[in-house]
Each structure stands twice: as structure tokens, then as C-alpha cells.
Amino acid sequence: MPKWKSIWISLRSYLFTTLLIVLMTFVLKPFGLAFDLVNIALIYLLPVLINAVFWGLSPAFYAAILGVLAFDFFFVPPVMSFTVADLRYLLSFGVYLAVAALTASLAARLKQQVLYSRQKEAHTAALYALSKQMSAIADIHSMLDSFSRQVTQTFDTEIVIYLSEDRNKLALAHRSADLPNHSQKEAEMSVVRHVFESGEVSGMGTSHMIEPLGYFIPLRAEDRIYGVMALYPKQSRTAISTDQKRLLEALAGLAASAIARVRLAEEARIAHLTAESERLRTAILNSVSHELRTPLATIIGSTTGLIEGEHLFSSGDRMELLVTIRDGALRMNRLVTNLLSMVQLESGMLRLRKNWCDVEDLIGVTFSQVKDFQQHRKLRAELPDDGPIIVLGDEVLLEQMMVNVVSNAIKYSPDYSEIVLSVQTTEDDIVISVSDQGIGLNEDEYDRIFEKFYRSAAAKQITGTGLGLAICKGIVELHEGTISAKPNEPRGTIMTITLPLNKQDDLNAASEERGIKNHDHE
Picture (cartoon, helix red, strand yellow):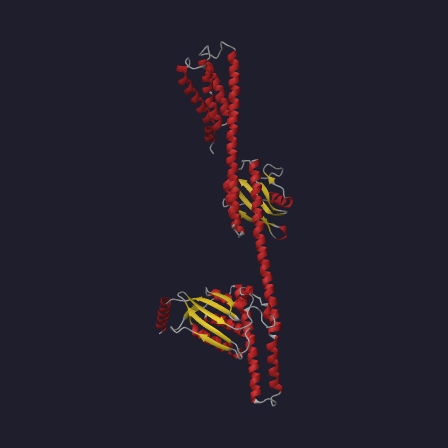
């Protein structure tokens, strides 16, 4: 602020007071004899109150002294003189000045209390707004940016934040937009390290004073210090008040709590991913050691028999051994496919290659793939009679999903039972239901069977990894559909798959697009 402007602001109140008392004297003088002198003295208290409320104690005392002089000169006999005929007026002047001083002090204190209340209200509002913002932010850099803006606006300061990294090494994590080229001087970093190690505030107003002037607060949450917040007032000589220091320490605690929350959430996420990875690794190892061992033993035994007993087996026996080898290889292929699909789903690498798929063709391919191990179970499909049903999706993944669901029904159904695959359409969806007459589930298990690695207690005697239905759920959700299970009456389970049904307009547009592409190729 220019020097002349600050001088004008300080002199403005005194000039206003002088003009006001001159105006009051000019107005009261003609009525001086009609008014009681006590009433005139009380009127001269008005400038004192105005100055105490708007400008403070010094202008108020100035108004009181100037008012006494004007009252004495113009209204106390002998008028137009500072002498007094009655010495009792001196006592009256003393009482007037005392009343004026007391009134000014009370008014100034009341003004200070109002300002203090407003400041406390603003600080409380700032704390509430900041805590609300920071509780909704999960990214530490976004959180620090929001925190920095709030502190900068509230205290008119620039801010630099250092956070502890590995082995408690401090690193610059954030700085205000107005400090793009902030240099970390050795003296400053020594204070930052001291604050981090001791947990004590340093800088302005403390024994650790450095240049440029700064105020350093540890970011402490419970018994741990996560970093240091450095504040630099935009006006370098502006002191930080005690109330501001308290609020800054509260804000630093709030920031530290938010940092602790974000870091703990990140650690929990990493721990969860590690646990899931370990669980997946264990499941894969168990699958390799158990699920692959049986078909491998079958394949090795059948192949060894064919090699060593070439002249002992008839053509029918050899065909039976070859079928056994093929069934074992197919079982191994399904297991490896499921494991790879789960890894792709978990890593987010699975991507859709959408094409127009005929649902009837999907069912036909599914039945042909499970035919080799359905044994004596009967598979039946129920399709609507109103023409082909077309769905937009990844044909390979949809086939895998259907094979997994039907294979699951075969695995848990008794021999010679019937498995029904029915298809229905609504205005917006296609609904595929697979009903079996298998062992069924408890009521609380129909949602859990789609979780990775979950296996019902009733199915422990049947081999499996608990990944097939989890993969089905992932594939269906990639197609913006749903999959659910419910009991079948009188026994068994019904799996229901719902996929979005594309409108005829979409099909026509797709057909036209394919026609245009084919024409271009011609």
C-alpha cells in the first residue's frame, strides 16, 4: 500500500471528528442559552461513541478532548474563553472526560468482541468447509491442492508442504501457484527437518527465525508426523496472531488426518490386492496340483497303454482310450481357459470385440462343446418362435460364459436328469435361463456363488476351483447385463442371464454398415 494512502487513512478519522464537532458547535451555539449545559455536554459525547465504534480508542480520546475544549470555549461562562468562572466546572470536565473514556473503552471493546466473533465464525466456517472437502477426496495431491487454496484465501499466505517418504525422508509435495520457483534453501530445510523430527512449531515468533520469514507447523495425526507445512505471508512483515496460530495448527491437524486417511486407504488397497494376488496364486497352484493331476494321469495312463500294449487292445479298446485322452485334454483346456480369463478380468485386460451374434447359434455351439462330458444328462433348449434373436457382443466370451453355466449345471446334476435352457425376450432385454435338477444351495449362498473361489459346502466332494461363475459374472457385466441364481422346484438351481436386446433399428443400421463395407471391398 502506498505511504500516502496509509497516512490518509490514519488522518481521516481525526479530520472527520474535527468537522463533526465544528458542525455540532455551529448548530448548538444559537440555542446555547436555551439548553441546559448538562444536555450540551451529553451531546458532545456523540462523536466519542462514533469514533470508538468505527475507528478505535485514539480517535475517541481525541473527540473527547476536542469536545471538552469546544464546550468550555463556547458554552461555559465566561464564553469565548478557556477560563472558567466557577472551579466546579473543572470537576465537571474531569467527570466528562472519565465518562467519555469509559464509554469509548466499552464501545471499542464491544467492537473488538464483534470482530473477534466474526473472525471465529469465519474460522469455524473455513474449518467446516475444508473438512467437508477433504473427507470427499481420495487423491492426496487433489486434497493438498484444496487445502492449500483454503489456507491461502483465509490467511493471505503462500504455502509449501513437505511429506515424509521412505525412511522418513522429506520431499516437496505441494506449493502454492504463486510460488512456482520456490527454492529450498539449506537454512529453510534445516528448520523443516527440525520441525519434522521434534514435532514443534518453528519460524516467525519462535526461537528458530529464518529468512525469508516463514512459519513451520508439523502435520501430526495421533502419534505420527506425516510432514511439515510452511507458510509465507504475502506481506513479509505481517505477524501471525495467536488466534491464527491456533487455527493453523487445527488446519494442520486436519490435513494430517486426511493424509493419514488417504495413505491408510492406499495401504489397505495394496494389502487387499496383495492378498487377492496371493489367493489367486494359491488357487492356481491348487488347481494345477489337483485339477490338472487327474486328467494328466488319465492321459498318461491311456497313452502308455496304447504304446506298450499295441497288440493287446482291440480297435474298440483303442477308441475308448483315445476318447479318454480327448476328455482329459478338454478338461485341462477348460481349466486353463478359466484361469487365464480370471487373470484378464482381474487385471482389466479383457476387452470386448463386439459383433452381431445369433443366440440360437450360441446355444448350438454350447451344446456341442459340452456334449463330450454330459454323459446321460438330457439337454433341452426352449426358443421363441418369432424369428432369430440377435445380441451385440463378443461371440467368444459369450460362448465361454454359456459353456461355463451349462457345464456347472451338468457337474452338479445327477445322471439321467434334464437340463433346460430357455430363452425369452422382453421389450429391452433377452433372458436366458438354465434350469437343472442338481444338489441345490442354501438360501444365503445364491449370491455368494458368483464370488471368486467360493464353493458351497454341499459341493466340496466335487472338484472345482470356484472361478467359473465368477468369470461368467465378469463377462455378463462387460456386456452390461446381469446374472443371478435362485432355487428350482422341486430341487436344483435356475441360473438367469439378462443381456440388453438390440432394437431392429440398430440391426438394420449395422446391416447397412456391413453392406457399405462389403461394397467398398468390392
